[in-house]
Length: 207
Image (cartoon, rainbow, N blue to C red; front, side, top):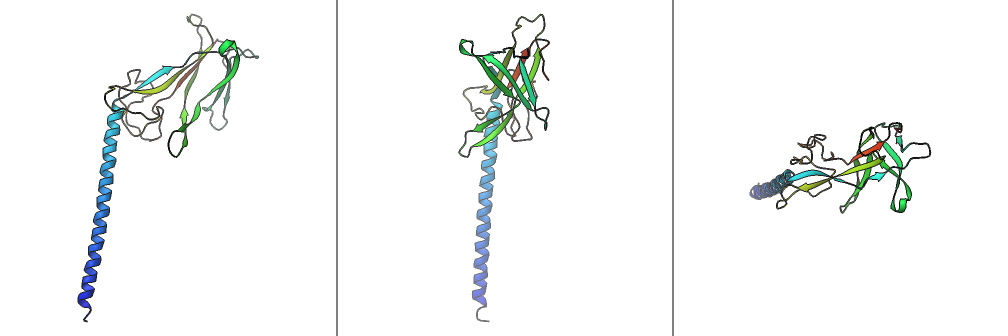
């Protein structure tokens, strides 16, 4: 009976401590969410000031293989849309070198905790028409990259093949290619793809 006031004080103290902890946690969560919102606004502004461009690699002249073809396509049994195209080309002093391009490539993300990211290339085989000015069998590659629209403002500086749930700015080099502008629903969805075209004569299309 004589301990009732002290118990009440202890109870009030416990309640005060609980309220203080809950308030502090709430403040931390509020500040964290505010920071996330601020980062999202900054990232959206950077993406809005970013355009997708394609830079051409040096054209690789295809050398005819022993079987008379210019390349060999090896597709995977699990996914027939994924595979590797092997070919031969010439380098310095006309040295013939075997090379290959794949629909899927793995590249290392330069971060503190390194991880591999998989990118998909857009590969197509085209028949060289009889009236085309360039009849040379060749492999052409347009590498996807990003540049600022206004160099005085922040723009996207991450990996050119991936983007988050952000709005991509105008694509002055062709925004209609693949519907790249808009809001992505997948944080790992590709921002753009390298475009690889294999040009071969009419009778040299392989499976």
